[in-house]
Length: 384
Image (cartoon, rainbow, N blue to C red):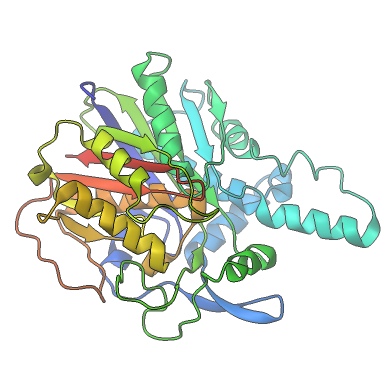
């Protein structure tokens, strides 16, 4: 990818916080963000927004009568997008594209409207327009008063990184100079939790680290859901205010062995990583932020794919899902944020219960992975 793409800002809200200082401080702690919450007739561990982020979303909802009818997935995206565009120096009315996706979309609102319909046989006036997936980018555009294309999509758990791929494509095609990309997810609902439990992948742990993401020796699945949004500002070329650069992008799909699994050695990940790496010398890759959802097969197959690509000389490996859970469509961009922070701070953040890994040189290039139901892997190579 000869033309560099600059990441000129990145913003998020999750269990980690809603500003870069708070998020970095949280990453330096071994404390996870999970709390037990009632869903239906039983409790489940989840990673909700932190208190400051919840207050911010409540204030946003009350700032405009129209916003009171929106799902949290839309409000999360608006809040993150406001921060990112301000940090990048983009102004109200600027021309830039928006691609913010979600795996589930307006989950909570859809469930509420459907439950009301079952009870009363009637549907609220705004039920349809407020539960379409296109809501996210269109409302972000409305809020920012931007000029440019507005795209929303769902490509399961690799949604946010597919948004990044699309933004890069628009920039390289000369169809835009700036693109706001990312993902937003508000999946902490009765029905969504029940779906994950039925798949037998949800964590039942009550120990110090209930989500054992990147624990290759675990004997049971430990996925835990989290909520949040993350977006970044992309600009064509090497910008002076860049936080990091996109060196390479890769993507791949594979024939599924099962509706929710990838192959034993994650062929899709092998292909996406090789594509993102291009002609990069493997020794130049300092770290990989893995998708690692905390499931037995998910973590192990990705690790095997990394071994296939890198051989015995593995980069430093990490994941953030042991801390903030799996945020579905937002997870890939939260991983990008983690990678950007490590590059900026020059400190590797490992997984506390994994075998110790030691940073022996400056962090210059970090690879980020994401994959979802459907075997749709994405890899992004970042550099300083």
